[in-house]
Amino acid sequence: MKKKKSSKQNKTTAANLERRFEEGESVLDYFDAKNAIRRINLDIPEWAILALDQEAERRGVARQALVKNWLIDKIDEAKKGREAPR
Image 1 (cartoon, one colour):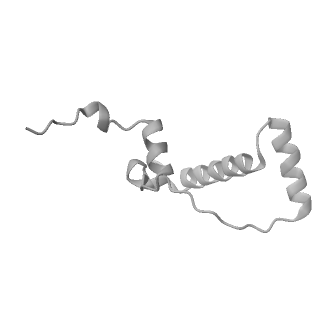
Image 2 (cartoon, rainbow, N blue to C red):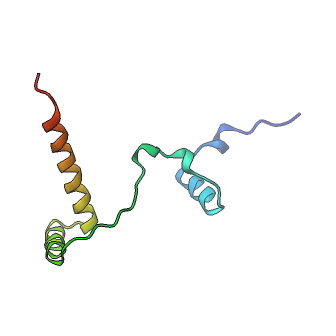
Image 3 (cartoon, rainbow, N blue to C red):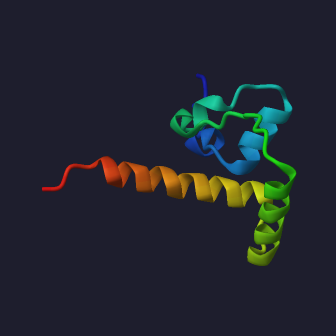
């Protein structure tokens, strides 16, 4: 008789995913693709980058985190502006 594998062995954990990734197995099925990240290039004037860096340092965050948060805030504001009043 064949032994059934226990569900404990098939459980997905961070260590399990890391092992699979390191062994070259695909782990994409375990993640939500709706929030997939795409890399873009953005040309910004030097003065704006310096201002971003100052603000990021003041807040104690990375420049990229600051830009992402500001963009998301602006997108949320734009969505609210498009909603019809009830």
